Length: 349
Ligand SMILES: [Zn+2]
Image (tube, rainbow, N blue to C red; front, side):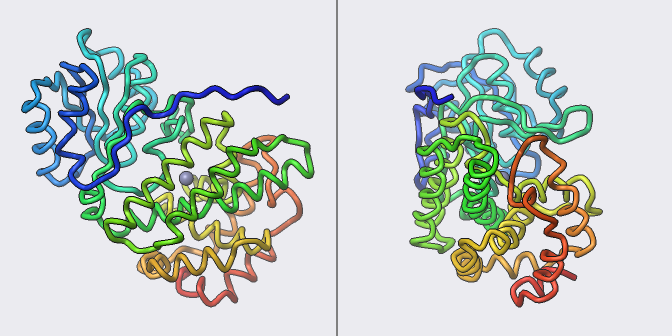
């Protein structure tokens, strides 16, 4: 059934150089005096220090600063239970785990959450779900979009290049995800939310116009990934951002001896899926050529046997989720693609 759409979108969005050191100003403007900060493990020491300086300069007390090492639902619930009563906002700084946990703690506490990614390795910094482990298994758990998104392009540019390229890999999956969604409509009648699909598909093009890892490229990548998160919120599902390529990556996380970064797995899977879908392959290949994506994947090649097993398992991961993998047995095609595609040759050992 179609219904009118009403969503909450981030109220504060800053994507620019120097935004990190202005965090205190942004929180001050929101009227916050006491906040809890969750930071990723292994961040350059200068970042938590700069954050503390920015907060204290504006009279904001970080009542607790937690270093997040565990992204389990149980850990998030424990943090929620221990929240000091005067806290008025949750701040997440860093990459995956800290942002996922902070988002979920903010959701449980019904407190505004400020997302401060220090790298752009996937679209999780502004999505309505948290990627958490539940009893040891990775799950996407419903949460809410952040109240604030603060992205310092200079800080993200200084992050390891492999993280940015992982973000590029996650970005191209929107092509294949939207294609799978339309395929699902054709075969099962699952309705496509036109605006969400348009936003998701369109969001890639801003980065495609300047596929360079520099300050401007970081701004475009950040914006593109952010729009994907908002597309998910609009339609109330992950359909615009996640299709068969994500199923393959989830399967790899479960079976690979050494799973690699989400966006690297998703990016290669998107390329393969685009060939099966006969759509957008040249665009994805061109973007990966331009950014050096293939080279970073080649540094630690994937194992073909693990990928074939992941492709075999992928259609069973999400019940009732129709994708190109539901159409036919694609295994022989995927094996042929891996064996013969010149770009993939160096990605598989
Ligand atoms: Zn993703």
